[in-house]
Image (cartoon, rainbow, N blue to C red; front, side):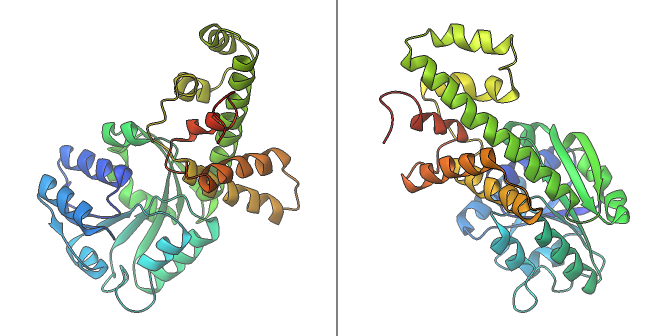
Length: 294
Protein backbone atom coordinates (compact mmCIF):
# COMPACT_ATOMS: atom_id res chain seq x y z
CA UNK A 1 0.00 0.00 0.00
CA UNK A 2 2.96 2.28 -0.47
CA UNK A 3 1.88 3.46 -3.91
CA UNK A 4 0.32 6.89 -4.02
CA UNK A 5 -3.01 7.06 -5.82
CA UNK A 6 -4.49 9.82 -7.94
CA UNK A 7 -8.03 10.25 -9.25
CA UNK A 8 -9.25 12.14 -12.30
CA UNK A 9 -13.03 12.40 -12.14
CA UNK A 10 -14.54 12.77 -8.68
CA UNK A 11 -18.19 12.10 -9.39
CA UNK A 12 -20.05 9.55 -7.34
CA UNK A 13 -18.17 6.53 -8.69
CA UNK A 14 -14.70 8.07 -8.63
CA UNK A 15 -15.18 9.68 -5.23
CA UNK A 16 -16.42 6.47 -3.63
CA UNK A 17 -13.56 4.46 -5.12
CA UNK A 18 -11.15 7.00 -3.65
CA UNK A 19 -12.87 6.78 -0.25
CA UNK A 20 -12.62 3.00 -0.35
CA UNK A 21 -8.90 3.01 -1.10
CA UNK A 22 -8.31 5.59 1.61
CA UNK A 23 -10.11 3.33 4.08
CA UNK A 24 -7.87 0.45 2.97
CA UNK A 25 -4.74 2.40 3.86
CA UNK A 26 -3.70 3.91 0.54
CA UNK A 27 -2.58 7.51 0.25
CA UNK A 28 -4.83 9.45 -2.08
CA UNK A 29 -2.24 11.96 -3.20
CA UNK A 30 -4.14 14.10 -5.69
CA UNK A 31 -7.61 14.49 -7.14
CA UNK A 32 -8.76 16.44 -10.19
CA UNK A 33 -12.15 17.17 -11.67
CA UNK A 34 -13.32 19.49 -14.42
CA UNK A 35 -15.73 20.77 -11.76
CA UNK A 36 -13.13 22.05 -9.32
CA UNK A 37 -15.42 22.32 -6.24
CA UNK A 38 -16.10 18.58 -6.40
CA UNK A 39 -12.39 17.82 -6.33
CA UNK A 40 -11.82 20.33 -3.51
CA UNK A 41 -14.53 18.79 -1.34
CA UNK A 42 -13.18 15.26 -1.81
CA UNK A 43 -9.60 16.40 -1.25
CA UNK A 44 -10.56 17.99 2.06
CA UNK A 45 -12.28 14.79 3.13
CA UNK A 46 -9.38 12.50 2.21
CA UNK A 47 -6.42 14.72 2.97
CA UNK A 48 -5.43 14.84 -0.68
CA UNK A 49 -4.30 17.71 -2.86
CA UNK A 50 -7.00 19.22 -5.07
CA UNK A 51 -4.88 19.98 -8.11
CA UNK A 52 -5.85 22.19 -11.00
CA UNK A 53 -3.90 20.47 -13.77
CA UNK A 54 -3.80 16.92 -15.04
CA UNK A 55 -0.01 16.97 -15.07
CA UNK A 56 -0.06 17.61 -11.33
CA UNK A 57 -1.97 14.36 -10.77
CA UNK A 58 0.70 12.43 -12.66
CA UNK A 59 3.46 14.17 -10.72
CA UNK A 60 1.88 13.30 -7.37
CA UNK A 61 0.77 9.69 -7.93
CA UNK A 62 2.15 6.40 -9.17
CA UNK A 63 -1.25 4.89 -9.97
CA UNK A 64 -3.89 7.14 -11.52
CA UNK A 65 -7.56 6.20 -11.90
CA UNK A 66 -9.63 8.01 -14.50
CA UNK A 67 -13.40 7.93 -14.14
CA UNK A 68 -14.68 10.31 -16.80
CA UNK A 69 -17.82 10.63 -18.87
CA UNK A 70 -17.25 9.68 -22.50
CA UNK A 71 -14.84 9.18 -25.39
CA UNK A 72 -13.99 12.85 -25.75
CA UNK A 73 -13.25 13.27 -22.06
CA UNK A 74 -11.13 10.12 -21.97
CA UNK A 75 -9.04 11.19 -24.95
CA UNK A 76 -8.85 14.70 -23.56
CA UNK A 77 -7.16 13.77 -20.29
CA UNK A 78 -4.55 11.90 -22.34
CA UNK A 79 -4.05 14.70 -24.85
CA UNK A 80 -0.90 14.66 -26.93
CA UNK A 81 -0.13 18.30 -26.15
CA UNK A 82 -0.91 20.87 -23.48
CA UNK A 83 -2.05 19.84 -20.04
CA UNK A 84 -2.26 16.05 -19.97
CA UNK A 85 -1.77 13.04 -17.75
CA UNK A 86 0.99 12.05 -20.16
CA UNK A 87 3.27 14.88 -19.00
CA UNK A 88 6.06 13.23 -17.02
CA UNK A 89 4.22 9.92 -17.16
CA UNK A 90 7.19 7.53 -17.40
CA UNK A 91 6.76 4.70 -14.92
CA UNK A 92 3.15 5.55 -14.09
CA UNK A 93 0.16 3.27 -14.52
CA UNK A 94 -3.25 4.52 -15.53
CA UNK A 95 -6.46 2.60 -14.78
CA UNK A 96 -9.29 3.86 -16.97
CA UNK A 97 -12.74 3.03 -15.66
CA UNK A 98 -15.12 4.95 -17.93
CA UNK A 99 -17.48 3.13 -20.27
CA UNK A 100 -16.08 4.28 -23.60
CA UNK A 101 -15.64 2.92 -27.10
CA UNK A 102 -13.21 -0.03 -27.12
CA UNK A 103 -11.02 1.66 -29.72
CA UNK A 104 -10.49 4.55 -27.31
CA UNK A 105 -8.89 2.17 -24.82
CA UNK A 106 -6.60 0.89 -27.57
CA UNK A 107 -5.58 4.46 -28.42
CA UNK A 108 -4.99 5.38 -24.77
CA UNK A 109 -2.75 2.36 -24.34
CA UNK A 110 -0.76 3.44 -27.41
CA UNK A 111 -0.34 6.96 -26.06
CA UNK A 112 0.64 5.73 -22.60
CA UNK A 113 3.27 3.36 -23.97
CA UNK A 114 4.75 6.16 -26.05
CA UNK A 115 5.11 8.17 -22.84
CA UNK A 116 6.78 5.27 -21.00
CA UNK A 117 3.68 4.44 -18.95
CA UNK A 118 1.25 1.54 -18.66
CA UNK A 119 -2.50 1.64 -19.20
CA UNK A 120 -5.25 -0.71 -18.12
CA UNK A 121 -8.98 -0.60 -18.71
CA UNK A 122 -10.90 -1.28 -15.52
CA UNK A 123 -14.51 -1.65 -16.65
CA UNK A 124 -17.03 -1.61 -13.83
CA UNK A 125 -20.24 -3.64 -13.89
CA UNK A 126 -21.59 -2.32 -10.60
CA UNK A 127 -22.83 0.92 -9.11
CA UNK A 128 -22.23 3.51 -6.40
CA UNK A 129 -22.81 1.37 -3.27
CA UNK A 130 -20.41 -1.28 -4.59
CA UNK A 131 -17.77 1.36 -5.31
CA UNK A 132 -17.93 2.49 -1.70
CA UNK A 133 -17.96 -1.03 -0.28
CA UNK A 134 -15.15 -2.35 -2.49
CA UNK A 135 -17.39 -4.96 -4.11
CA UNK A 136 -17.27 -3.84 -7.73
CA UNK A 137 -17.29 -6.39 -10.54
CA UNK A 138 -14.19 -5.32 -12.46
CA UNK A 139 -13.32 -6.45 -15.98
CA UNK A 140 -9.80 -5.52 -17.02
CA UNK A 141 -8.08 -5.29 -20.37
CA UNK A 142 -4.64 -4.35 -21.55
CA UNK A 143 -1.06 -5.44 -21.04
CA UNK A 144 -0.93 -8.41 -18.61
CA UNK A 145 2.05 -6.72 -16.91
CA UNK A 146 -0.11 -3.69 -16.19
CA UNK A 147 -2.80 -5.91 -14.72
CA UNK A 148 -0.31 -7.76 -12.54
CA UNK A 149 1.21 -4.56 -11.24
CA UNK A 150 -2.04 -2.91 -10.21
CA UNK A 151 -3.94 -6.04 -9.16
CA UNK A 152 -3.29 -5.57 -5.41
CA UNK A 153 -4.96 -2.16 -5.59
CA UNK A 154 -7.88 -3.44 -7.67
CA UNK A 155 -8.52 -6.28 -5.24
CA UNK A 156 -9.44 -3.69 -2.61
CA UNK A 157 -12.07 -2.28 -4.96
CA UNK A 158 -13.54 -5.50 -6.27
CA UNK A 159 -15.25 -8.64 -5.03
CA UNK A 160 -14.81 -10.13 -8.51
CA UNK A 161 -11.78 -9.22 -10.59
CA UNK A 162 -11.46 -10.62 -14.09
CA UNK A 163 -8.77 -10.14 -16.71
CA UNK A 164 -10.45 -10.27 -20.12
CA UNK A 165 -7.63 -9.76 -22.61
CA UNK A 166 -5.89 -7.16 -24.73
CA UNK A 167 -6.82 -3.48 -24.72
CA UNK A 168 -10.38 -2.95 -25.89
CA UNK A 169 -11.61 -6.44 -25.04
CA UNK A 170 -12.91 -5.60 -21.58
CA UNK A 171 -14.70 -2.59 -23.04
CA UNK A 172 -16.38 -4.86 -25.57
CA UNK A 173 -17.62 -7.13 -22.79
CA UNK A 174 -18.79 -4.13 -20.75
CA UNK A 175 -20.69 -2.81 -23.77
CA UNK A 176 -22.48 -6.15 -24.09
CA UNK A 177 -23.26 -6.25 -20.37
CA UNK A 178 -24.84 -2.82 -20.56
CA UNK A 179 -26.63 -3.61 -23.81
CA UNK A 180 -28.38 -6.63 -22.28
CA UNK A 181 -29.02 -4.78 -18.99
CA UNK A 182 -30.59 -1.85 -20.81
CA UNK A 183 -32.75 -4.14 -22.95
CA UNK A 184 -33.89 -5.92 -19.80
CA UNK A 185 -34.65 -2.58 -18.14
CA UNK A 186 -36.76 -1.33 -21.04
CA UNK A 187 -38.53 -4.70 -21.28
CA UNK A 188 -39.34 -4.78 -17.58
CA UNK A 189 -40.76 -1.25 -17.80
CA UNK A 190 -43.06 -2.37 -20.61
CA UNK A 191 -44.17 -5.48 -18.74
CA UNK A 192 -44.96 -3.60 -15.54
CA UNK A 193 -46.51 -0.76 -17.49
CA UNK A 194 -48.81 -3.15 -19.31
CA UNK A 195 -49.65 -4.82 -16.02
CA UNK A 196 -50.63 -1.45 -14.59
CA UNK A 197 -52.79 -0.76 -17.65
CA UNK A 198 -54.60 -4.07 -17.11
CA UNK A 199 -55.27 -3.20 -13.49
CA UNK A 200 -53.07 -5.97 -12.10
CA UNK A 201 -51.59 -5.77 -8.62
CA UNK A 202 -47.96 -4.88 -9.32
CA UNK A 203 -46.64 -6.33 -6.06
CA UNK A 204 -48.14 -9.65 -7.12
CA UNK A 205 -46.85 -9.25 -10.66
CA UNK A 206 -43.29 -8.59 -9.53
CA UNK A 207 -43.45 -11.64 -7.27
CA UNK A 208 -44.64 -13.80 -10.17
CA UNK A 209 -41.91 -12.39 -12.42
CA UNK A 210 -39.32 -13.27 -9.77
CA UNK A 211 -40.41 -16.93 -9.75
CA UNK A 212 -40.60 -17.40 -13.52
CA UNK A 213 -38.70 -16.83 -16.72
CA UNK A 214 -39.39 -13.10 -16.39
CA UNK A 215 -36.90 -12.88 -13.53
CA UNK A 216 -33.76 -10.81 -13.93
CA UNK A 217 -31.22 -8.83 -11.95
CA UNK A 218 -32.95 -5.70 -13.21
CA UNK A 219 -36.20 -6.87 -11.62
CA UNK A 220 -34.37 -6.96 -8.28
CA UNK A 221 -32.77 -3.56 -8.64
CA UNK A 222 -35.37 -1.58 -10.59
CA UNK A 223 -38.79 -3.25 -10.41
CA UNK A 224 -40.01 -1.66 -7.19
CA UNK A 225 -38.52 1.68 -8.20
CA UNK A 226 -40.44 1.58 -11.48
CA UNK A 227 -43.67 0.82 -9.66
CA UNK A 228 -43.26 3.60 -7.10
CA UNK A 229 -41.56 6.17 -9.38
CA UNK A 230 -38.42 6.20 -7.25
CA UNK A 231 -35.72 7.12 -9.74
CA UNK A 232 -32.82 8.33 -7.59
CA UNK A 233 -29.87 8.03 -9.89
CA UNK A 234 -27.41 5.15 -9.65
CA UNK A 235 -27.01 4.71 -13.42
CA UNK A 236 -28.52 7.53 -15.42
CA UNK A 237 -30.74 7.28 -18.45
CA UNK A 238 -28.25 9.52 -20.25
CA UNK A 239 -25.50 6.99 -19.62
CA UNK A 240 -27.83 4.19 -20.71
CA UNK A 241 -28.38 6.02 -23.99
CA UNK A 242 -24.63 6.50 -24.49
CA UNK A 243 -23.77 2.91 -23.64
CA UNK A 244 -26.56 1.54 -25.81
CA UNK A 245 -25.07 3.47 -28.73
CA UNK A 246 -21.62 1.98 -28.09
CA UNK A 247 -23.00 -1.55 -28.22
CA UNK A 248 -25.19 -0.84 -31.23
CA UNK A 249 -22.22 0.56 -33.15
CA UNK A 250 -20.23 -2.58 -32.34
CA UNK A 251 -23.09 -4.63 -33.76
CA UNK A 252 -23.29 -2.55 -36.90
CA UNK A 253 -19.54 -2.89 -37.33
CA UNK A 254 -19.94 -6.65 -37.14
CA UNK A 255 -22.66 -6.56 -39.78
CA UNK A 256 -25.46 -7.50 -37.38
CA UNK A 257 -28.96 -6.16 -37.08
CA UNK A 258 -29.85 -5.65 -33.43
CA UNK A 259 -33.52 -4.61 -33.32
CA UNK A 260 -33.87 -4.84 -29.55
CA UNK A 261 -30.71 -2.83 -28.94
CA UNK A 262 -31.93 -0.28 -31.47
CA UNK A 263 -35.33 0.10 -29.83
CA UNK A 264 -33.76 0.34 -26.37
CA UNK A 265 -31.35 3.04 -27.47
CA UNK A 266 -34.29 5.00 -28.89
CA UNK A 267 -36.19 4.72 -25.60
CA UNK A 268 -33.33 6.11 -23.52
CA UNK A 269 -32.64 8.80 -26.10
CA UNK A 270 -36.30 9.74 -25.84
CA UNK A 271 -35.85 10.18 -22.10
CA UNK A 272 -32.90 12.47 -22.68
CA UNK A 273 -34.85 14.49 -25.25
CA UNK A 274 -37.66 14.95 -22.72
CA UNK A 275 -35.28 16.21 -20.06
CA UNK A 276 -35.33 12.94 -18.08
CA UNK A 277 -31.73 11.93 -18.76
CA UNK A 278 -30.70 12.63 -15.17
CA UNK A 279 -33.10 10.04 -13.80
CA UNK A 280 -31.95 6.53 -13.05
CA UNK A 281 -32.42 4.07 -15.90
CA UNK A 282 -35.48 2.81 -14.01
CA UNK A 283 -37.06 6.06 -15.16
CA UNK A 284 -37.71 4.47 -18.55
CA UNK A 285 -40.92 3.33 -16.87
CA UNK A 286 -42.09 6.94 -17.14
CA UNK A 287 -42.46 6.26 -20.86
CA UNK A 288 -44.50 3.09 -20.50
CA UNK A 289 -46.78 3.31 -17.45
CA UNK A 290 -50.28 4.64 -18.08
CA UNK A 291 -50.71 8.30 -17.23
CA UNK A 292 -46.99 9.02 -16.97
CA UNK A 293 -45.97 9.67 -20.57
CA UNK A 294 -44.66 13.15 -21.21
